[in-house]
Image 1 (tube, rainbow, N blue to C red):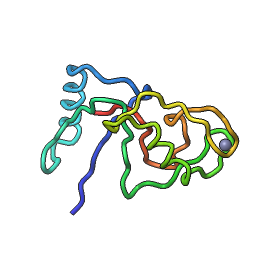
Image 2 (image 1 turned 60 degrees about the vertical axis):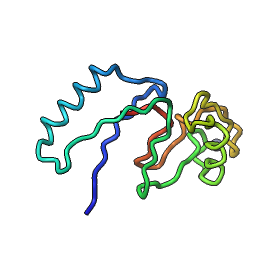
Image 3 (image 1 turned 135 degrees about the horizontal axis):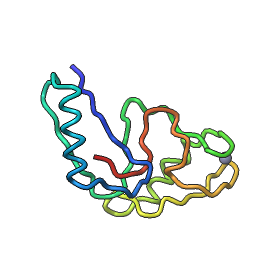
Length: 119
Ligand SMILES: [Zn+2]
């Protein structure tokens, strides 16, 4: 048995929807997929967070030169994370070409959410 999770990830990593908008989105989802087993659970994440794709993780590349930066990325995430696990500043300098960018702008190969608030 598997489950399907739908994460709505805003382009602005610090955006959080108003509860009325979140409730409206949930109502739309229930209309689109009324047969969902187990129902629906909507959760608000209280800060900018990385949405881990779990087994769908396919790596991360530099958005400037395209280099594989997965080995560097884990430590960069740990360094940028606040003690509560959420993020404030996302600014980073990538090791491959020294470009200054941010964790949200990295090229996540597939199905990964950049640091951001989701619901
Ligand atoms: Zn690079």
